[in-house]
Image 1 (cartoon, rainbow over the protein chains, first blue to last red):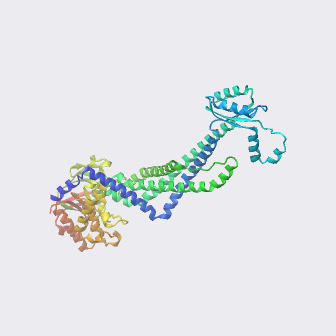
Image 2 (image 1 turned 180 degrees about the vertical axis):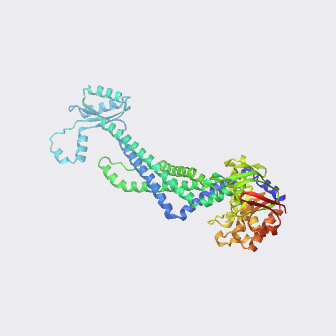
Image 3 (image 1 turned 60 degrees about the vertical axis):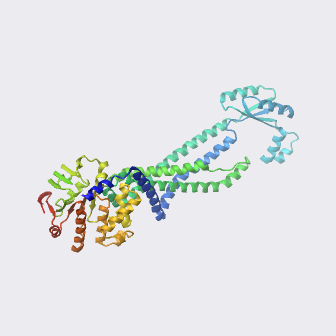
Length: 320
Length: 221
């Protein structure tokens, strides 16, 4: 009977020991599955690449959109108004008027551009310098560029009414319509990319599901043995979930590399293009938070795909 | 340790693998289960480790009524039963050490405790120098002993063996049987399915004989 009593006492291991062993098993399984993936570099790389492309494509689009949104934000996420002054208003009076406008509570900034400055800038940028220098008189009026505090259309229109009646002002123009259109376009593009990202995320999960299904099939005998010697479902599941996790995380790393590569290739032409409009624009990447988000998304999708595959296929395997 | 109470097992398709089988294996007893292939030996073993469920009747293992064990509780039941298979059921991509350690890892023993017990089990079956080897580099007899080490490493009160000597020559078979006797001497209950009748005679233990799903003799030693 000594063997039996021994068996009884030793099967009651302490709770903390169990927890430690559980954590140790997690550690061990996570490292082992990663080693398995690295031991088969070709097939692992194929899966990583597929996931990387599926994650990278929407990531690149999102970053590009973000950049476009930032540019338009710089140009006035808030609508901008141009007040064209009467030609006979002097520079001094115009400058005072600009200061007066800036002090209003409903105005954020007001920038005065004299007709001379405007002409100079126009000559520099438009390439009509030769033609313009032949004019005997500056055809441009003084302009005050105003950014109101509120983008609310009601308040904007009341500002417009106030200024249209002002004696110094000839004409008020609001750069609102094109901005509205651009924002609507951006929202549309963002929705489109979100839809694309969702479809591709589903794709990642299906790819993952299939990859894990094959892995389960390859280890059918091992699963049977583990179940025979008393392995719980959680124990059997664990390596496959880690497999999904590593596939997803590896895919996300590939996605980040693709993103970085595309930004690198795009940045030179984009900056050249941007310089003809503005001089201080540079493409920026997803940043630390964005990068982390891509990694987390990859790992989560991989694990989720693995959970789906495991819940569908693992119960089919019972020792025969 | 094991009690069968009017147990029948019918497979889908109508064939009855076991019919109204009743017997009891006492604590610390060692017995042989004999019969031709297809007589129901494997089915009987499968009922004990819950690979199959009885169609009728009740199976008790260590006082637990297996009819009342839910799917989630199956692993817990299996951890108290060591099983030795004819085809060893070893993991060929793992070392001997890892194979033997499997039940302990599953049960959540600390790595230090696992090491201690695995070495004890391997030394018991005479394979202390092979722990780093892989199963395919071992002979059939050695592989079987790895399987036995794995079955006893958890010190289960009950050991089942399904044709453990099926592929071994008489000398090795005797060695394996002696090993089983040693476990029996320290209190482990054993049930060994075999069709090696000479061996059964030599061991002088109780024999349960199945014929076409019925228990035809329960010979005392």
